[in-house]
Length: 254
Image 1 (cartoon, rainbow, N blue to C red):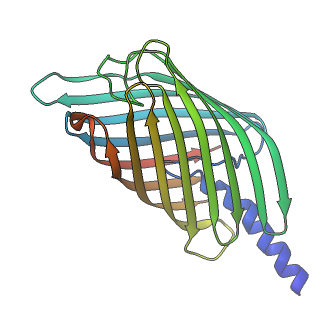
Image 2: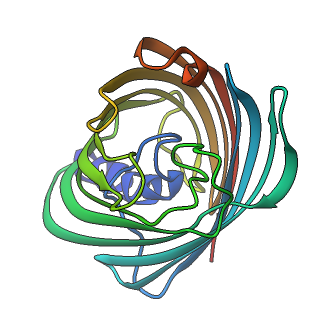
């Protein structure tokens, strides 16, 4: 009987990978090769300078079980205080991932990936960092993740480089995910996420530490996300300080 329970638990854990990545962070768990994921993660961002609504349409494809390529096509509406109000396309992004380390054990796994984000300057030059700068940017980072039946931990460390804009950035992320329901099949889960983002903008001598509290519902091959992100530390131009961001997302894997 004990062995049967372990088999059931492991099967449920394998299905738990379909819960998806953290909301504002990332994780190196990948689904099977040949799978597609359609997703969006709307961000409503309020700063001292403007309010923006960012709606990306994302298509992710896994050529193999340890590689991923994706394109993000973003719609953006922004309203600059005492300035322009526009609806337009933001910077298009191309994503690549490669998982180069994996170690599985009973009821747990540890994985590491290399990641790159290439931002194509299709957006307006409004210096909306991470969304629409109108300049080429290349991000290169390492993501690690440790998951068990009871919790998950993810970390990310990388550098964003832009040869023309002054948005070069050392970026670090740390997230913890806690499932609230027992593993079950068909998969149904509610997850809480606690996520931190640390950004050091080297050319501007700015620093920002953000915290996001999120909740996610996962059922079979679909997820729904909600998170609120708030600043903890901001040493930067007061007009660029974040008031808050709200994230609303969904994804479907097929």
